[in-house]
Length: 299
Image (cartoon, rainbow, N blue to C red):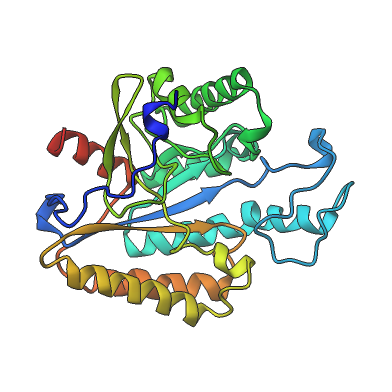
């Protein structure tokens, strides 16, 4: 029998969507997510057969063996990109969420310290950057628990949420719920509001993520310029803001240090942050804030 949380739902909230009752009666809740993965990806020095080349500038072949070019692109994200992104949000006084692979945090204590200073929240993004489909259920359970423990120790605060680097398995959500430490997961792309689901007879909160509003489109050739990135994000926000007069919702923007952390793209991001801040009745918030609000206001 199919588990309750694996039954597909094509209806959701339908036409009568709930009022999220965002703080300040905001029309849109805007959440920026920085994916911090550098140092957790597949690499030959870490015992893998290949070097991960996903979401890099291209030109690397994902061949068997060590790819020094792809390695250096990941290093850019950790050496340069993360600091540029944090500078963009720091100067704007805007909060953000870090989707962090725990091994990446272990390898850069200065980033850990900076995240603590920024007051950004951290969502568990894996022990390593691996496909959970390649793990047994016990291996996946261990990976999720270990990531939680490492992030909690490093940050001094446990991660509130969970998000798989690649798509989750049929076991992921159940394992997250059974773990008991996570208050939500973001392993879904099916809505613009959080929603409750039932897993093993227990209520569980899902805060959907977005690959539509995501800088990964640069790496995949769908976006070419900072202006295109800004225009896409602006138009999405403007539509949600217009609709928000009667039906508020949320907008997630996904960023990667080795992609949006490059100067031109970061400039496009900065323009969008300023565009959002120029509007009234907008809640720029952390992902944990959205989850906490939903648990309190829509339990």
